[in-house]
Length: 140
Image 1 (tube, rainbow, N blue to C red):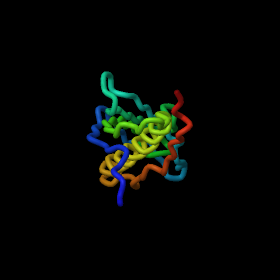
Image 2 (image 1 turned 90 degrees about the horizontal axis):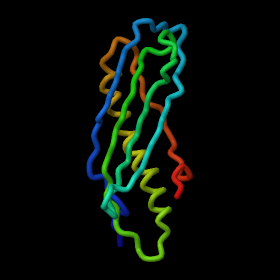
Image 3 (image 1 turned 135 degrees about the vertical axis):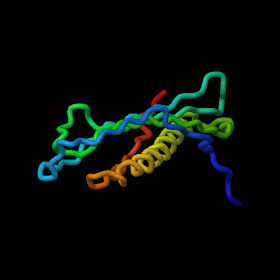
């Protein structure tokens, strides 16, 4: 018998999205940027099973505009509902699972949203590389 999921993403949105095309780009100087990726998880105040996960993905501010055709910053946030933990379960395990899975889902949404911009530009399209969210980043 299939077990019900421990949590579900209820909604997500993009409160901030910045995208700029560099007209100084020179494909001979092309270099993939080392993206800045940050994720946060917090329990919604007064709720025991509603969590907020947020993700910020951006190109470095000091990036050479001749080396990469785009500058961007994407902030996406979502709401996750979890099942109550059975008695005796370690809450840190659930918190780590919510962090990893929630940030991964939001990263995928950011990749898709950015592809809408990248695929309709003068310069070659760019796809966000894969990203690993480490459960050890969440501590008590």
